[in-house]
Amino acid sequence: MSKEQNPMTHPKIEKATVNICVGSDVERLKKAEKVIKLLTNRKPVRTISKIMNKDWGIRKGDTIGCKVTLRGGEADNFLKRAFKAKGDSVAEYSFDSQGNLSFGISDYTDFEGLKYDPNIGTIGLDVSITLERSGYRIKHRKRKRSKIPHRHQIDPDEAMNFLTKKLDIKVV
Image (cartoon, helix red, strand yellow):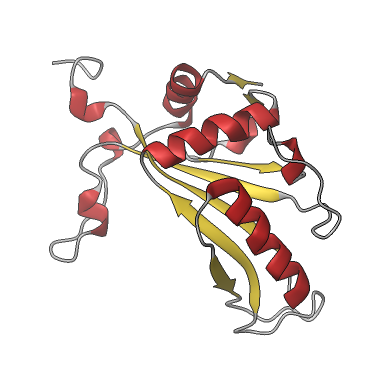
Protein backbone atom coordinates (compact mmCIF):
# COMPACT_ATOMS: atom_id res chain seq x y z
CA MET A 1 0.00 0.00 0.00
CA SER A 2 1.48 3.35 -1.02
CA LYS A 3 1.54 6.51 1.06
CA GLU A 4 -1.24 8.14 -1.02
CA GLN A 5 -3.62 5.19 -0.52
CA ASN A 6 -3.13 4.75 3.22
CA PRO A 7 -5.51 7.08 5.13
CA MET A 8 -3.27 6.96 8.23
CA THR A 9 -0.56 8.87 6.36
CA HIS A 10 -2.72 11.84 5.36
CA PRO A 11 -1.77 15.05 7.23
CA LYS A 12 -4.37 16.96 9.22
CA ILE A 13 -4.56 20.26 11.06
CA GLU A 14 -4.02 19.43 14.73
CA LYS A 15 -4.40 22.97 16.05
CA ALA A 16 -4.15 26.65 15.24
CA THR A 17 -2.72 28.98 17.86
CA VAL A 18 -3.50 32.71 17.79
CA ASN A 19 -0.99 34.76 19.78
CA ILE A 20 -0.56 38.45 20.60
CA CYS A 21 2.51 39.57 22.53
CA VAL A 22 2.44 43.08 23.99
CA GLY A 23 5.18 43.15 26.60
CA SER A 24 4.62 44.13 30.20
CA ASP A 25 2.04 46.88 29.51
CA VAL A 26 -1.20 45.83 31.27
CA GLU A 27 -3.43 48.21 29.33
CA ARG A 28 -2.27 46.88 25.94
CA LEU A 29 -2.72 43.34 27.27
CA LYS A 30 -6.41 44.03 27.99
CA LYS A 31 -6.81 45.42 24.46
CA ALA A 32 -5.10 42.33 23.00
CA GLU A 33 -7.46 40.06 24.95
CA LYS A 34 -10.40 42.02 23.54
CA VAL A 35 -9.07 41.55 19.98
CA ILE A 36 -8.62 37.79 20.40
CA LYS A 37 -12.13 37.55 21.87
CA LEU A 38 -13.48 39.43 18.81
CA LEU A 39 -11.67 37.17 16.34
CA THR A 40 -12.18 33.74 17.90
CA ASN A 41 -15.16 34.06 20.32
CA ARG A 42 -12.99 32.32 22.91
CA LYS A 43 -11.51 33.58 26.16
CA PRO A 44 -7.72 33.98 25.78
CA VAL A 45 -5.13 32.61 28.17
CA ARG A 46 -2.37 34.95 29.37
CA THR A 47 1.22 34.00 28.53
CA ILE A 48 4.02 34.43 31.04
CA SER A 49 7.67 35.22 30.27
CA LYS A 50 10.16 32.47 30.97
CA ILE A 51 13.29 34.62 30.81
CA MET A 52 14.39 38.13 31.79
CA ASN A 53 15.23 40.64 29.06
CA LYS A 54 16.53 44.00 30.29
CA ASP A 55 16.35 45.59 26.84
CA TRP A 56 12.60 45.05 26.66
CA GLY A 57 11.97 45.66 30.37
CA ILE A 58 10.62 42.15 30.91
CA ARG A 59 11.20 40.13 34.06
CA LYS A 60 10.74 36.42 34.52
CA GLY A 61 7.13 35.71 35.51
CA ASP A 62 5.60 38.85 33.92
CA THR A 63 2.48 38.46 31.79
CA ILE A 64 3.54 39.48 28.30
CA GLY A 65 0.73 38.38 26.01
CA CYS A 66 -2.29 36.19 25.41
CA LYS A 67 -3.19 33.27 23.18
CA VAL A 68 -5.99 30.95 22.14
CA THR A 69 -5.67 27.41 20.79
CA LEU A 70 -8.30 26.35 18.27
CA ARG A 71 -8.93 22.76 17.18
CA GLY A 72 -11.23 21.00 14.73
CA GLY A 73 -13.85 23.00 12.87
CA GLU A 74 -13.13 26.18 14.81
CA ALA A 75 -9.53 26.07 13.59
CA ASP A 76 -10.59 25.49 9.97
CA ASN A 77 -13.07 28.39 10.00
CA PHE A 78 -10.59 30.76 11.63
CA LEU A 79 -7.80 29.79 9.22
CA LYS A 80 -10.01 30.45 6.20
CA ARG A 81 -10.72 33.94 7.55
CA ALA A 82 -7.05 34.51 8.45
CA PHE A 83 -5.78 33.51 5.01
CA LYS A 84 -8.42 35.73 3.40
CA ALA A 85 -7.08 38.63 5.50
CA LYS A 86 -3.55 37.65 4.43
CA GLY A 87 -4.51 37.66 0.74
CA ASP A 88 -4.75 33.86 0.33
CA SER A 89 -0.98 33.54 0.09
CA VAL A 90 1.85 32.64 2.43
CA ALA A 91 5.62 32.72 2.01
CA GLU A 92 7.56 29.49 1.59
CA TYR A 93 9.93 30.41 4.43
CA SER A 94 6.98 30.38 6.86
CA PHE A 95 7.13 26.56 6.96
CA ASP A 96 9.50 24.86 9.40
CA SER A 97 11.29 21.52 8.97
CA GLN A 98 8.39 19.57 10.55
CA GLY A 99 5.84 21.08 8.15
CA ASN A 100 4.29 23.51 10.63
CA LEU A 101 3.37 27.01 9.47
CA SER A 102 3.56 30.40 11.20
CA PHE A 103 2.61 33.80 9.83
CA GLY A 104 1.66 37.22 11.09
CA ILE A 105 -1.21 39.58 10.36
CA SER A 106 -0.30 43.22 10.80
CA ASP A 107 -3.69 44.49 12.00
CA TYR A 108 -6.90 42.90 13.21
CA THR A 109 -8.96 45.17 10.93
CA ASP A 110 -7.70 43.15 7.93
CA PHE A 111 -10.29 40.52 8.89
CA GLU A 112 -13.57 40.78 7.04
CA GLY A 113 -16.33 42.47 9.03
CA LEU A 114 -14.11 44.12 11.66
CA LYS A 115 -13.75 47.87 11.81
CA TYR A 116 -11.18 50.06 13.50
CA ASP A 117 -11.93 50.76 17.16
CA PRO A 118 -10.11 53.86 18.51
CA ASN A 119 -10.22 52.39 22.04
CA ILE A 120 -8.15 49.41 20.87
CA GLY A 121 -5.87 50.96 18.26
CA THR A 122 -3.85 48.83 15.86
CA ILE A 123 -2.81 45.41 17.13
CA GLY A 124 -1.26 42.65 15.04
CA LEU A 125 -1.28 38.95 15.76
CA ASP A 126 0.61 35.75 15.00
CA VAL A 127 -0.98 32.53 13.81
CA SER A 128 0.74 29.14 14.10
CA ILE A 129 -0.61 25.97 12.47
CA THR A 130 0.47 22.55 13.71
CA LEU A 131 0.12 19.67 11.26
CA GLU A 132 0.13 16.02 12.30
CA ARG A 133 -0.70 12.59 10.97
CA SER A 134 -2.63 9.89 12.77
CA GLY A 135 -0.32 8.17 15.22
CA TYR A 136 1.35 11.28 16.66
CA ARG A 137 -0.14 10.37 20.03
CA ILE A 138 3.01 8.38 20.82
CA LYS A 139 4.83 11.69 21.16
CA HIS A 140 2.47 13.06 23.84
CA ARG A 141 1.15 10.06 25.75
CA LYS A 142 2.08 9.44 29.38
CA ARG A 143 3.28 5.84 29.17
CA LYS A 144 5.80 4.47 26.67
CA ARG A 145 6.39 7.87 25.07
CA SER A 146 8.63 7.73 22.00
CA LYS A 147 9.76 9.78 19.02
CA ILE A 148 7.95 9.99 15.72
CA PRO A 149 9.88 7.96 13.12
CA HIS A 150 11.37 9.93 10.26
CA ARG A 151 9.25 8.11 7.69
CA HIS A 152 6.07 9.29 9.49
CA GLN A 153 7.04 12.97 9.89
CA ILE A 154 5.61 15.67 7.65
CA ASP A 155 8.10 17.50 5.46
CA PRO A 156 7.58 21.11 4.29
CA ASP A 157 6.72 20.17 0.69
CA GLU A 158 3.98 17.81 1.83
CA ALA A 159 2.62 20.48 4.19
CA MET A 160 2.54 23.03 1.37
CA ASN A 161 0.63 20.64 -0.91
CA PHE A 162 -1.84 19.75 1.85
CA LEU A 163 -2.61 23.36 2.81
CA THR A 164 -2.83 24.42 -0.83
CA LYS A 165 -5.52 21.80 -1.46
CA LYS A 166 -7.39 22.14 1.86
CA LEU A 167 -7.48 25.94 2.30
CA ASP A 168 -6.99 27.12 -1.33
CA ILE A 169 -3.89 29.20 -0.64
CA LYS A 170 -0.83 30.00 -2.71
CA VAL A 171 2.70 29.42 -1.49
CA VAL A 172 4.93 32.22 -2.75
